[in-house]
Each structure stands twice: as structure tokens, then as C-alpha cells.
Length: 287
Image 1 (tube, rainbow, N blue to C red):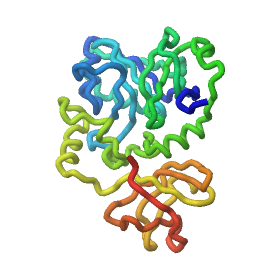
Image 2 (image 1 turned 45 degrees about the vertical axis):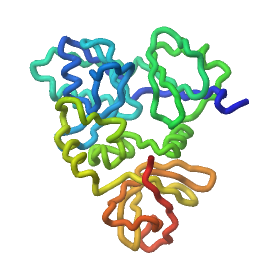
Image 3 (image 1 turned 180 degrees about the vertical axis):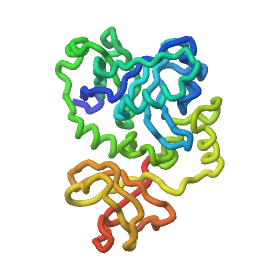
């Protein structure tokens, strides 16, 4: 079978699924989300971030605009409690209601060639699991997609994690979290609009864009043997220069993401997992 024709899927439970309604829902979310929800001609859910006032990443999500008065928010990994608290903290006199639909929502990632017509009762959008085209299907009734998935190859969460890291796609909050800026994880291109109006953290994003660089950067690392623990320190020349954020085993060892201080490392020289250990970790900035 041609790999392009192979059908694979991954069942997953959204960490967050929120319904936001009210006469002010559209303008409220536009003033909170890093990406443009009202861009002319834009179709389907939009990927972006929820920042704090210092521009640090609290959560990420896809926002699906059904109308100015109804939006749905779904996230792979960012907890619903974090997103809901972030939103409700800024609802002052707005006519906005946030409802948690996470417990009753399921999802499936579709990789490969699938029918253009999918089951009624859900919504579909391009995902960000791998670089090849794939779709996410959100639904409330599992039986609605069981027939669709018949005969396709199921993928585990561990396999999806491995593919994500190999594809150079960081995850929130595992790789980029509340102590990090979006630009440190290379999220400025797909998750941030520099042309929309004000939103929380927008001034910091504008300053970073004018500076043109950050002091830290998420990089991909590769090593032999078993993967280290999450947040394990990495060293160069006996000095700690960063920490491992996420990792997955591969045939030749492991591959992962590490946050490193750019001013403390020399490009082209390997990293080590201990201060006095062998420098055997290759690294590169992700794409």
C-alpha cells in the first residue's frame, strides 16, 4: 500500500473544550487571543495562544468561530482549568458566558487519505501533530466515528508524541509554558498576529518582533541510550546551558526538545547530560 493512501488514526481526549457565548463573545476573545479571529476570508478554527501580561505562554488552543456570539475552544494538552481561569479573569462587564464541555467531548486525529464527507455532529480542522496534512475531528458521540475508523491503523499517544517531536512541533505546556515566551519556541509565525488590534501580551510581542531575537530558544536534541527525565539539565563545557523539555525513544536512541540559553552555547558543539560527562547530544534549532 502506498503510504500516502494508508489510513491511520489516534483517539484522544481534549484537555480543554469550552463553549463561549454572548453578545460580546467575538470582541472579547479577539482581545484575548494572540491570533486574528476576525481576519477576512479566514475559514475554520484558528490556532493561537493565551498569554499573561508579560507575554508568557499560559495555554494554547484552536478557536472555532461559529458566529460573533458563539465560539468553541479546544486544546490538545492545555488544561481546561487554566484556559477558563485565564478568560474569566478578564470578563468584567462583558456579556460573555464560558461553559466547560470537556468531559463530554472526544476527538480523533486522521492521518492519510480519508473521505471528504465525515460524520455529522462534529467539526473538523487541520491539526498540528505532524507536518504532513492531517485533520482533527471533534465530536460528542464516539459511535459517530466508529464506522469511519473501521480498517484503519490505530496509533498510540506515545507514537504521536514521537512523530510530533521528529516533525519539529513544540507542545504547550510541555515544551513552551508559563515561564516562556512564544518566540522562544518558534511559535511567532503560526500562533501570533502582528497586524490585529490589542490583546493581552501584545505589547511584549511587538517589542520582541522589533528586537528580532530572543535569548533562549527551544532546540531539538538527539542522544543514544535511554531518554533522560523531563527537565534534566543539559551542559556544554561543564556549564549548564538549558534543560530537556520533552523526549521520545527512536530506533537509534532518543529525540527531544530542550530549552537552551543562546548566549551560553557554541553552535555546532554537542551537549552533555552531566557537567563532567561525555558531550554526545547533537542539537539543532527546530523548524
